[in-house]
Length: 115
Length: 114
Image (cartoon, rainbow over all chains, first blue to last red; front, side, top):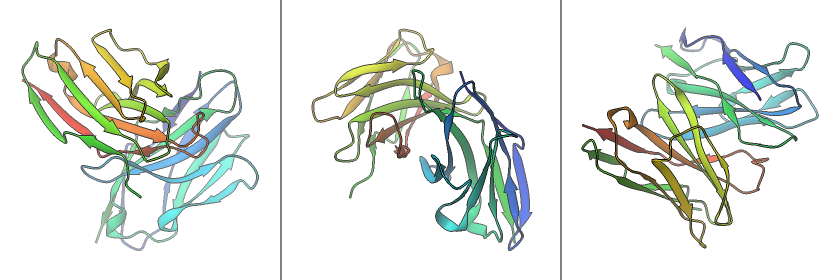
C-alpha cells in the first residue's frame, strides 16, 4: 500500500515570489509520481508526472518538481507565482507493479497567492 | 478534443432517494475511475472500469455501484442516500490501463443530500 503526505494544508505567498509545495510518500514498491491542480469548481488537471529518468520534471504553467528517492519526496516548485496560480494542489502516487495501480492522493495543499 | 464530461453538474436529493451520475470519457480512453471528494476525507477512490469490467473497487458500502457501457461511458449509482454522501463526485479517464499517462478529470457532480 502507498500513502502520500502533503506537509502543508495551506501555503500563502505573495505574487512573483517563489513557492515550494511539499510531498512525501511511503511505498513498498516503486511508484510513478504526479502533481495535479484543481481550480475552484473544476476537476483535477495534470501538472506533471515522474515516470523514470531525470529526477527534475518540468510541467505546465512553469511548475517543476524534483524526485528524491532517498527522501521519498516529490516537491513542487515555481520560481515566480501569479494570482492565477491560486488553487488546490494534489500529489499522487501509483505503484509501478504489484497489483493495483490506482493512484493514492494526498489531502491537498491550498496555494493562496496575494497581490 | 472534448474533455471528460460529467452530468449533471449539481444535484440536490433527499435522504433515502437514489441518484445516478453520468460520465463520458475522452474519446479513445477505455479506463474510467470514480472518486468522492469531501473536505474532511479528501479524494477517495470509489471504483474503476476498463472495457466494461470493474477492475478495482474502493472501500465504500454496497449502496455505491457503477457500470461502464460499450462506448466507455460510465454511470455510478448511489441508493438510499445519506447526508454523509454529500460530496463532489469526480470521474477520471485514462488512455491506458495502468494510468501511465495520468488521468484526465471531469469537473465533477456536486451532490447535496438534504
